[in-house]
Every structure is written in C-alpha cells, then in structure tokens.
Length: 246
Ligand SMILES: Nc1ncnc2c1ncn2[C@@H]1O[C@H](COP(=O)(O)OP(=O)(O)OP(=O)(O)O)[C@@H](O)[C@H]1O
Ligand SMILES: [Mg+2]
Image (cartoon, rainbow, N blue to C red; front, side, top):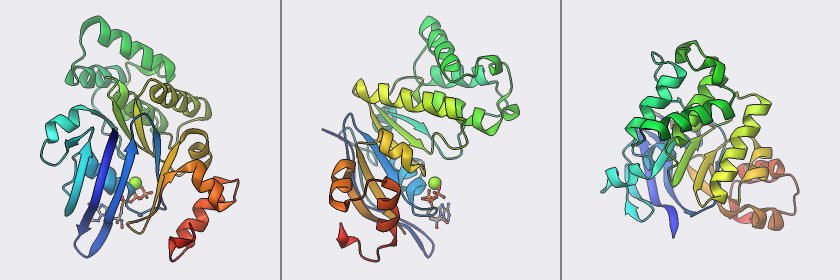
C-alpha cells in the first residue's frame, strides 16, 4: 500500500497558485524527499497533507484514509515537524515532549523513557529544564523533531528537519530517520540539502513553481540523467522549462 497519495492537489492564495495540480505517491517504508527551490510549494503541500491547510482542490490519502473526509483518522497516523517547529515557547524542553507525548496517548514509564531517550540522543539532556524560547534555533529544531516522532507514528512528515542543526545532531536525526524506515515507517522529508537526499532518500519528488517536474525513484533519476551528483540533477531539472528531458 502507498502511505500517502495526493491527486491533483491545488492551493491558491488569491492570485498565487502555490500548488498546481500536484500528484504523487509515497511508498510505505520509503524515505521520500520532497524537494524544490524556495517558494516552490513544498510547505504548502505538506500542510495540506497533515490537515493544517484546506486545499483549493484535489484528494489526499493517508494509509488509505481520505484525509479530507476522515481527517481525525488520518492525523492519528502522522508525526509532524512543521516548518515553524510548533513547539510551545513557555514550556521547557522536557515539558514540551511530555505534553505532546500525552496528547499522542503515551503515559507513565513509557512516556518517561521515550522522553529521556530522545533528549539524550539529540543532545538536549542538559537543556531539559530550559524554556523552549530560551533554546537556540537548532535546539528548538531538534526538540520539534523529537516531538514529531515521540509516539512512533507510522508516517512522519518533516519540513526541513536538519535546518540549522549542528553536524553531530544532524547525523543523529538522519540515523533516527533511517532506523525508522528500516522498521517499516514512512518518512516524507523536505530539505535543501542535496547530499542528505543522496544519503537518505529512496524516492523523490521535485516541485518547481507549484508543479511536479519529477516523481519517482532517486536511483532511476540518477541513472537516466547520467549525473553522479544529485545537486547537478536537481539544478538541471528546476532550470528546464519543460521537464520532458527526464
Ligand atoms: N499563507 C499564505 N498566504 C499567501 N501566500 C502564501 C501563503 N503560504 C505560502 N504562500 C505562497 O505560496 C508559495 C509557496 O510557498 P511554500 O511555503 O509552500 O514554499 P516552500 O517550497 O516551502 O519554500 P521554502 O523552501 O522557502 O520553505 C510562495 O509563493 C508563498 O509566497
Ligand atoms: Mg517551506
């Protein structure tokens, strides 16, 4: 089964067509890179998928549920790291995780253990009693990542999870993402880091000016393009007026 399917998804903001009839599928257990230049429509697409924004038109399915008609069921299956992190500035790092863990059905020892584990892995342990608005932006970013995965949902949606995160923690985040997919979880990941894409993603969709210019296997795209560096492929694709070259 596909973990996520979007069909002819569209979002207009007044005159701006942010997402223009976008269709793609995300295979269960894959790490799917959703890529594109600034303003391409990535965040807008992801927000529609996780129910924060109503599409102008189109369909969204999450693990077979119609996400627009059965929003509650679809939302339960998702762990989300939004572009704006979404953490509460007036709670400490630890309180943020406890709060979201409870919200997602964890309690008691399981919750405690999970919070400790994540704080440790992301090197946030000594900040656990610090208010979130006193954390550095990278620390907040890591906290938002921890929040998204705390309840081990079947599908993760991560909008630039390693943005501004230091080398060791970014590696830890990638490691967690990889483990997660190895255990059967599905990850949709937006990033501008093409090296990260090459390291992590089995599949990619590339969006430019609201339109998908490629969607499918990363290895296949590398093969047909004849380029080794994913960055070169990406640049070629978003520069092409007509993407038929691929
Ligand atoms: N709430 C909004 N109201 C009006 N226009 C919006 C809104 N949100 C996004 N847009 C517009 O939609 C387009 C796509 O924005 P979006 O945030 O989806 O881009 P993105 O691909 O995530 O870019 P980035 O890489 O910079 O995060 C942009 O032109 C943006 O100005
Ligand atoms: Mg964005």
